[in-house]
Length: 342
Image (cartoon, rainbow, N blue to C red):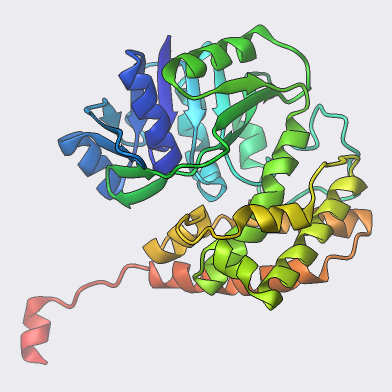
């Protein structure tokens, strides 16, 4: 089996390290500083508690994918999918599978499932229908991962200890399938416990309830979840956001066993872990807030659920994202001769 990891960031790099260490035929797709580090120095993974792994893994850049792959793990941020969609689709073998591991709700959420369709499409997930045009839904496998991984530097990953440690895969039409069982077997053999679900949308919502709150709040406050939970005002806001998220899930037929008070207790004392959106702010990267936050607001608008707290947080995080994107615009250096003349 030829395996491609498209997007060798924290999660993608971690999956690639496990698969390479297990002797699998795996290739990473990375760009920029990450590509340069992986190509020259290899991939370094440090687990809390002392375990370490250093591997040279074949690494290529987008647009350079050689041949076709039987299994493609897509670990890009949701904000990066549209630009890479054609390249990803072109990397897939005729009977291959795309395992889509993104936070938030997926663009295919209301395709082939049992959840009630809202009155309006979720434009925030696939605004120009680029994903719908590029990806064959028959090849798509939904996925959710629970594994906190942090990027210390290009090519260097740190894996803190955490209670949750699993990958969940499922067909988007909720059927049982041999390919999902095969994917689960491959990843479990590589060291990441993986199970198959027959309700991938419920699993997406279960993970989303965590990201919906802690990702934007940690990014905006530059604080870990434990600090927010320790603040009476922060805990009250987080609790309200969770209640709103649960109400939106119910509006499309998803009942979750999720207790906001228990979630606040779970993160109590967590002063080290950095959610992905907080890592992105500190690294000056665009934020994945639309799939995580705006998609829920869009559904709420279609199903008539009031979400004032989520809307206020979205307004703030969108401004922060706009500022980051503006700061990333390249500044053309002044030619030396002009500087001298000045």
